[in-house]
Image (cartoon, rainbow, N blue to C red; front, side, top):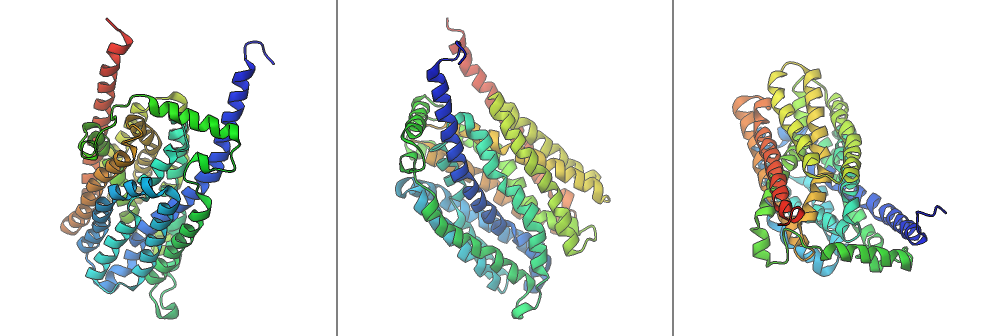
Length: 443
């Protein structure tokens, strides 16, 4: 053993490696699968719309309104859901969420017109509310901050993968038109909705609430993990202990919500509308499914790489700002490529690469701002604020498309939101540097 490497440090590093490896493999793949199914159920209406809108008499504006109602419900129930999870435990609450949205998602197959479609989307939002911020909170119970960007990136890679794998599956399910007396879009909702309920049952057996409940960790691994997390919780944070109403009105929480607003809106809007954007170039349903895979597949691979890079460097501000700026520029540039499928695909791919690359570093940045006592409400509030913009942008996209007939023009609200987020994160970084300067150069 080298003289410069004390035996204690070697032992601690071995315990850390063993603990993080076990936690990563035990929790993250299952949570990733759950989020994959959640996102498929959230955005499969985008593929269903290729035939459903005509069957139900839905205009683009009506479809956009239904899509937006999902986020209205999500916004209303998100903070209460995260607070409830902290009280009853992650295992029970995540299971409840998944079973609820699975049932509602499958039941969407039986909507008969605009109003029942609106109701189903609202109920789906209410059922799923709290899953994402709940998992982000749950990950802070298990992973020290040095691991969070890469772990969040691996977990959230389920979003682009849901479109990469879900696109051809959804397109294929549309081909079941008439089977069993049902439309293809009805089969789509049924087949893609039920797995969530089954995974919810699995969560009851697979998700321990805290490291103290993890029998698969050794006592030394458990002690190291709980000690490390406790030490990090003891460090003062910009959003320290405060009442709920002060957390919800905190300037840092609102700034972080604005930063994430553009990314959230772009993720959800393109997942819902990109199939229709691509089909507008004259593609068949199946060709649309295959083409829709490409941008999400590329984004999924680079998302994990960017998360690892952010953890290795420890830098959060520029690792969030640069990808967000790329998204804004590329979405705006689609105005110049309205007659070219290849150019549009290239720009959408770059936009999604940037959009998904920020997920890991952004949530690592956010959780470093929040104290343990404000994390549940703060994470949910950041996501809620972002979904206010998501709801408005998703609804507005449909209205603008109906009025102008142009998808690139309809994407302009996303350009504005991502540009505003880029500016805000840079200002936040500048303020952080200003606050740190007196500590680094004491008088």
